[in-house]
Structure formats: structure tokens, C-alpha cells
Image (cartoon, rainbow, N blue to C red; front, side, top):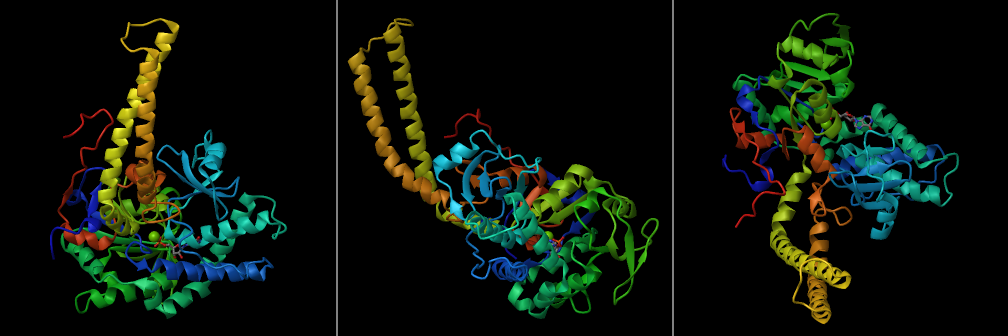
Length: 474
Ligand code: IMP
Ligand code: MG
């Protein structure tokens, strides 16, 4: 295999991580070890959700899943029925009310003084692909609620709660997943390289774990389908793992003392394990403390790899200091799109710095005019007319620049999603999602098989990073 990965298949490092020092690697399953065809899965989930709402008498017959409507990393404002995109400080830069995009002025009016704060109950972050069906339905229902088409719901928050609960039921009740299992090709995007990446780590002496919220019957079938055909002859997916933990109930898996059960019979007979884990095997429920105890390892020796920004990387790091890797499949599209637009981005940057220089001069002239009018400060050799004429000249140049900057900014602002732009950026700044990734994911990458490009012994070094006061390069 080519050792230099294509740029979109890199493993990117926020916080230096020596893989050699990692003795155990835990993997999440859904959207981590196994990638679903997002549009097919979410359309399927959406249809289950829609049918359930219809059976409750909701007017949802005409609604359809729109994969372009929403992306991961957005935030629901439950108070106002808005979906917003915020920058790394939580300030809202783009928003829609239901499915209607808000204008720049509307966004400013509503949010200039109200940054999003995920610690309050008002805002809910879209952490995973599994939420796309839910948020699409929510936005469409906000429209219907505003039109007076839905009765018995008194707030946007209550509406969100009802959608959440109904989707939950669809996930729990077996039908939706039974249909996935009946037609895996339609829903699962296989990656034959993933089993090899895990095998490398296993043979390098690391203990591997699968820790998934999925239930046993589902996880077993999915792993058989996605792993067994690509392992060496005679090897099964479960031979890779020291521990398999299903129905893990993350995030409480990382914080609570949930009881743990051991699989004693393939058909799903579980027995409680009252004390420490007796041996490697397949378990249900439990908690991270029991796992650490079994492994005899502290958090800095364990790497957890998952796709859910809150459940998999935020909580495991904050509570237990596990090392973390986030799988963000969207990165592949994002990196490709950004490099395709790099010429425009460069031109935009150049024109922006030109504009900044002109604006600086304009501000300076304004100050000089102020001093001249109020007769203070150092004497200058420009009179009022000269200041006015140079200022007018500068305004003209800035306007000309703006005519070129606007379409360029629009183009790069619409990369990846016409409505919401790139995942990791909000305008020129990092997005709220990028900030979460930076804080909680030590490394991040588009898929698990990218580990093949780097050995199990690699030392991931974080880049030096830039600060606003760094000397300008070049
Ligand atoms: P993991 O990513 O391997 O931990 O597993 C994710 C599991 O959570 C899958 O079995 C999903 O069906 C399930 N899941 C995802 N979203 C929801 C939800 O909104 N409600 C209940 N279960 C969910
Ligand atoms: Mg997952």
C-alpha cells in the first residue's frame, strides 16, 4: 500500500499521541468500524419516523427526506425552532427557521447577543449522522406548526421532544433494523481494508475492544457481514477483540456503574457478572471503570475511536482522560472540495488582505480628519479637501474589491453544502464543530482503514499551530 495517503485520507493530530504507548484500542461500531450509506439509512429511518407520526394523526403524508437540508455540526435552537451554524465562540453565523433560511439581518437581530451555549437546555448539537433524519423532520414540522397544521404541541421544544422520542422508538423497536439486516448491501458501504487495519494493531500487541450501543443480534450480524469476508481464512470478526461490549449505553457507560452481563449462549442468554470481568468475551452493558480494571490500564493507555462527537470522544476524554480518535467521514469530501477551490481561496485571501490595508488607511484618514476638526494632536500636512479626496478614492477601490470578493466568498462559503458550507469552518473562522473536534479528539480522520497508511507504532505529532501574533510568513 502507498505509504503517503491521499490528503483526504490522512490522520490529523490535535494533541500529540504516541500509538506505541497505547495498549488497548476500543472501537465504536456504527459509523466507525462500519459505515452506512448515509442517505439510504437516514431516508429509511425518516420513513419509519414519518409513518409513526402519521399513525398518531400528524399531517406528514407529503413530507420527504431531503439529504441536502441538514448536515452534522449544526445546532438546534429549541426555543425558537431554528437550526443554526455557529463559529468556535458559539456565535451564530447562519440559521434557518424550520426550513426557511434566515437573512443576514435576521440572524444578527436574533443572535447578536445570544451565543449558543450547549450547557443550557436551549441548544442541542447534531453529533452524528443518525440525527440527520430527525433534524430534517423537525425543520419540516416547525414549518407545519407555524402554519397551524399541528395541534396539541405548545412549543418548538416540545415538538423536538416528540420527534426525538418517536425516532428513539423506531430505533428500539426491531423492524427498522430488521430491514437493514435483510438488505445490507443497500445500507452498508463496505471497506475491506478495515479488518486489516485492526489485525495490524492486534498483531502489534494491542488489546482491541468493540464497545457499541447497538444490541447483540444487530451488532453480530453487521460485523459478520462487514468483517468476516475480509479476514484471513478461519478467522472471525470476534477473534479480533479481547472484549466485545454491546448495548453499552454510552455516554453513561463512561460515567455510571451500569451492571454488566456476560454472554453464555449464542442465542442471547446473559448472566450477570457481579465482580471484575473473569475473561475475554462478549458482554452487555457495564462501564468503563470495569474495563480499565480488567485491562489493568489507566486512561492514557487506552485509545477510543468513535464517530459521535459527544458520546464517543467528549465524555470519554473529559471523565476518564482516554485518548480519543474521531471518525469524520465528511472530511473526505471536504478536503477534496477545498483543494478544488484552493485557487479561489488564495485569490480571496489576497483580496481580503488588500481590502484590510485599504480599510486601515481609510480609518487612519478618518482619525486625522477628526483631529484636524478638533484641533489637537500632531500637525499634519493634509488639508480637509485632500483627506476627503483620498478617502473617496479608497472607498471606490474597496467597492471594486468587494465586487470580486463577494462571489468568491460565496463560492468558498458554499463548499460541501450550499446551505451550510464546510463542516469545519464558519466563514473565515473555525466552526463550532471544529472547536469540539480540537478540544476532545486527539486525532481525527475520515475512516478507520486510514490507520493502514500509518503503522501501529506511529507517533502523531501535533502541528505547531498558528497564533494571531505570529510573524507573517513569506
Ligand atoms: P454505536 O455508534 O456503535 O455506539 O451504536 C449506535 C447505536 O445507537 C445504533 O444501534 C443506532 O441504531 C442507535 N441509535 C442511533 N440513534 C439513535 C436514537 O436516536 N435513538 C436510539 N438509538 C439510536
Ligand atoms: Mg457510532
